[in-house]
Image 1 (cartoon, rainbow, N blue to C red):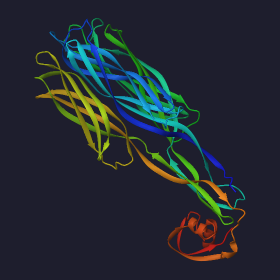
Image 2 (cartoon, rainbow, N blue to C red):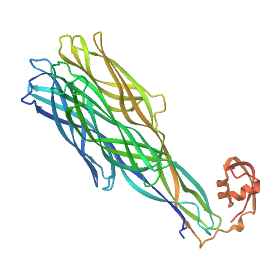
Image 3 (cartoon, rainbow, N blue to C red):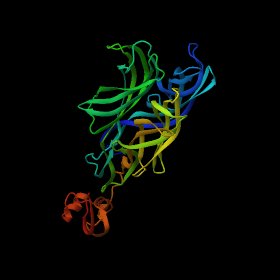
Image 4 (cartoon, rainbow, N blue to C red):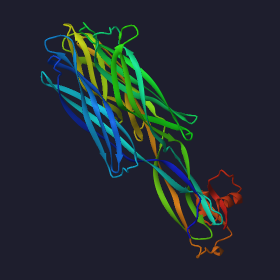
Amino acid sequence: MEVNLPKKQFTYYREVFQTAFPQEETYEAVVSDVLPDIREILDVTGYTVVRSKDVYAGGVSLTGQITATVLYAPDGELGVKCSRMSIPYQAEVENSAIPDNAIAVAEIQLLQLSAEVRNPRKIAVKAELLVRCTCYVQESVELPVPGGEGQGLHFLAGAAELTPVELLREKSFVVSDEYILPGSKSEGTELLRQELRPRVDSVKCSGGRLLVKGVVEAELLFLSRGEAQPVAALYRTPFTQVLDLEEELEDAMGQAQLLLTGAFFEQTTGAQGESAVLAEFHLAAQILCTGTRTVPYIADAYSNQWPVELEEEKRADFRCREAFSITAVYRETLDTLGEARQVTAVSVTTGRYGISEGKLYAGLGLCVLYGDSQGLMRSARQRTRLEEPLQQEEEGLRLLDVRVTEVSAVPAQGGIELRAALEFVLQRAEPVEWTYIRDIQCSEDAPLDDTQWPSVLLKTVTPKQSLWRLAKSCHSTVEAIRSANGLEEDVQDVQGLIMIPKCR
């Protein structure tokens, strides 16, 4: 006979697939007819835009473009020129574990951009992307819990302390701002490039609402009329997004992954006649919240009346801790061609990152634009790797993100001294393995013969054993053993001479 057990429903988002893989895109572009020939490439920067994210049975398709800007020194004249291009990409994530109702959390990271001159009018650009994608499905599990009247069963209650994903939401929004270009006039100012770094700083639950706070960092490089040296200016546009929740999440930990879905810039005139830029950013926040939950279940059961068969099921879950940060500083002296008189702009980008052999690591792309003693614009570039010793146990650590938080560069003897501060964002995930009873069968047609059991058993217990094990093996109950031996309710283990009464 199958025992009819009460059940509690446990609903969460289960991770069904996760991957990260590199992808390379190449592109050739011809310099516009209105621009001079290329003498030397100074730098190439860019950002990724995601146009679509489609989930289907067996995969996820991501399409978009890389907006790249090549800065170069023109042949036969001073100053800096730029060539812009849009490089399309399509990334396919394929795995049979992905159903068509999956929710995909994706990221397209631009690891590296490089450019070379094919001829004075043609540029070849190579982009290396890192595609990250995690897929979830909403799942409801019904777990049997202790209960059921008249079954003659005794239950060992268990409880798993978990941090399941309880919320997955995506919200699209627009952020706009006006950036005044310092020291510029409204006429003749040329916007050379835009570097974008959108990020989320915090995700918090408060009173049935979810607050997502972050900032879009935009570094603009521009050239005023009559000037040979461009100027760089950094702008920060903060944003706050509010999501109403159907029910309040308790002890929730949130994180969000931003997708840039569009970026638009328009030069205009400021209130004081200076040159300004109207910026508009289209973003999609992929928000994930985990909640601390105690999940009750039946760990064991027995009967002193009937033989029982237990059907067990094992589960492997994780319990995540609050995310934390580790700061590391990178210093380097970059070689220059001749003497560097003035630093114009500094760029530090992150490449692949991870944890290996007790160290945090991140690939770095370094570029400094500077003016030399002859008034020419030059660049010092280098690809390198930062390693930071990990002062704690590596097992169970997840590296969520690496951010460049501060950059500075100054001319020095024989080169340029560069300093960059990076923030490694980590989270510890502890595995939780637990086994619960999913079904109980009782053989009522073959009741146990309790006449062969003594009414009271005196047993010397050594080493210490649990009351549950003694009760189950000696046809008693935990409550009866406690009562017969004058034990407090919180006592779970005993040793020595113990009185064990027979119970049905």
